[in-house]
Amino acid sequence: MGLRRHVIGASALVLGASVALVGVASTSQASTETPGSAFGLAADGPVAIKPVPAVVSPGGQLARRSLIEQPENAIIVAKALSVAADSQHSQASAADVRTLKDEISAGAISARCEGGQGVSRIANARVAGRPIESKPAPNTTVPVTLEKVGTASVTFNKQVRGADGRLAVTGMAITVPTPGGKTQTIDVAKAMCGTADNGDTSSIDGGVDHGDIGSIDGDTRSTDGVVDDGDDISTAVRDDKVTKEAPAPVPAEVNLPVAG
Amino acid sequence: MSGRVSFARISVVVALILLATGLGVTLAMGTTFLPHATTFERLQGVPRDAHPFAEGTGAVVHPTSSRVVYARPGGSPMAVLPSTQLGNPTWVPVVETAPGWVRVLLPSRPNRATGWISGTGGGLQVARTPYLIKVERAARRLTIFRSGRVIGRWTVAVGAPTTPTPLGRTFLLAALSKTGQGFGSVVLPTGTHSKSLDTYGGGPGTVAFHGWPDKTVFGKAVSHGCVRAPDSALSALSRVPLGTLVIITR
Image (cartoon, rainbow over all chains, first blue to last red):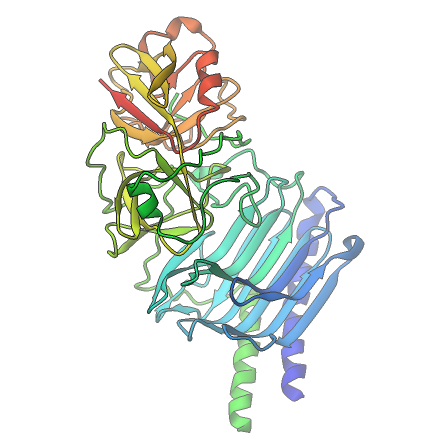
């Protein structure tokens, strides 16, 4: 009981400090009706975990939720899951995260989304024994070779901007291939905020690729009719058995200065 | 038992306080991160395209999530291929296969960069493009083929002698409708880059197909490496699937 009080107290300290910070930052942002949202942990694939705890700011009001420990599952341990969101800001954090047989661990992970801008912080994280920087650049990806499984990828500070301008910031996103052909994903500390007004899909600043610009949860552009059944694609290509025609492109409103 | 709980409690509280205050200890010594294979990157140690004028397999693949790229099948990871490029879904051409693996052209420097990605385990869509695009520099000619038949041919502007359009095969990387350079309604970046301009206009020197307001440039070698094309050519190009090979010859 004492432990719970301390964890909740610490989480409130984090959220209180963050909300105070974003409150100051929000004065220069355009107002918006789109609520922020956040969750602490979610997984999809052979092991599915619905987002917990999850929060959506009701009517722009500040909302918070906390969870001492995630529901028992086969792939990940995480504690002190806390989320908060209001009209323009959202934040998620987790502590004592361990997954994939402890090949990936972190003392704490947080993601914060403010007015369409994102930041993540990582404390005491290790991937296959290698230490991870506490302030990783957006979309910092580290491969992990898992025996009998294949190569998983771990992305820290994953930042994905949707076609509507909303930004999704995930402290740690893991993708694991599985023998059945499905992909197992694990997202820890995900925060979403912003609107088309304060998001910017029209330019890529400073030559930095923000990764998955154009989609929040996978591509929003249709690729119907192409093969993705987990079979060995190299065989189909080698035997010239790829018959589905690739889709025509849909121009994106992105500014890339080209050579001219 | 109580001592262990106390230690765990303290660890959690300290970690959360670090996050709250924005403090953190940099622990990155010795860590190597994989670069993303995008038009903005220069990749190290990548294998080059061994057949830069071949017409390829016609197969293109799309990673539905970020995918690790290797220098050879089962070798060392060297990059990550993201699922999108410039707001478009990533489609890259397959130029070679090995059991369980496909070798693809990459959109990063150096030109003709390739890499191997796993062809198993799902998360990779494969399709066929019946199109092929050829640019003949000396003839200033752009030709689009579909299933081996010419569907359009245009006189275009190519790179000036000091800023030539790079030779070899590359691919359509993206379709952009808002570029801010006055190059027409659509710009089609490719996976190759100017060899003489490291940057241009704040971008990474990406070679693209685009329009030009002065029609007198067509038929001349005057550009900074891009292929300036008439509107009808751009209209036809904008219907060609991403990942389609672009072969640039003398």
